[in-house]
Amino acid sequence: MDTLVDYRSVELHRKELVVLKEVDFQLREGEFVYLLGRVGSGKSSLLKSMYAEIPVASGQAEVLGYDLTRLHRRDIPMLRRQIGIVFQDFQLLTDRTVYENLRFVLDATGWKGRDTIDARIEEVLREVGMLTKSYKMPHELSGGEQQRIVIARALLNSPRLILADEPTGNLDPGTGEQIVNRLHEISRKGTAVIMATHNLSLVERFPARVVRCERKRIIDGE
Image (tube, rainbow, N blue to C red; front, side):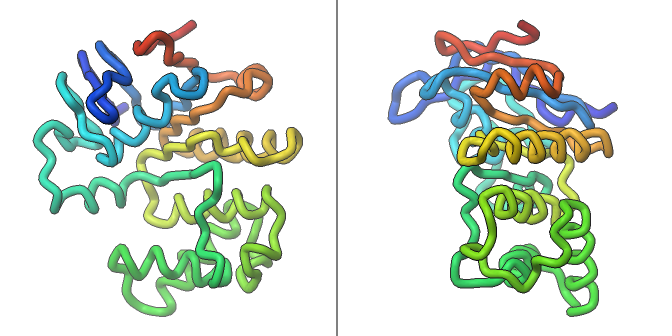
């Protein structure tokens, strides 16, 4: 299996302060990893560094074949097209239907042809069990339904990697379990998933590799 993420002695800064240091982390194709840690421990910063939202201060960092320490700004969109991002607060466009939200992403990433676009939207909505909701506005959906749409959006460009930052944070426990189960199903189909969370019950319910952010360092496998 290919190594999708390869961090060696990486250091990350936020506002000139060290957030994480001496980070050694590798992720392979189809792997599922929980990223645990308290608020402010660096979980989100680590994920943001992987899609070039935060620069790598030092060390060696490669994601999907891109060297993040030498990444040109013009190459960032190409990197991000291979990464699906699932946010805690959904970040759906509130003035557009589910279909229009998904169409917006495909238009922005260069998809052409109404039939091709419609077929892809139908495909990802079916995968998350939301095929009948394409005409709905975000406010007409429950939190769990909105998060399913966010996962569908993340899947549109068939990403090799999904980064999920506290995807169950705004959901009730039962709905949260459904979302995590869905992410595990996606992983089993070959897409690697990194899920930041502080919900240990989900980790116990759906076991996978665990990586912890503690004292500005990454602890793998405990």
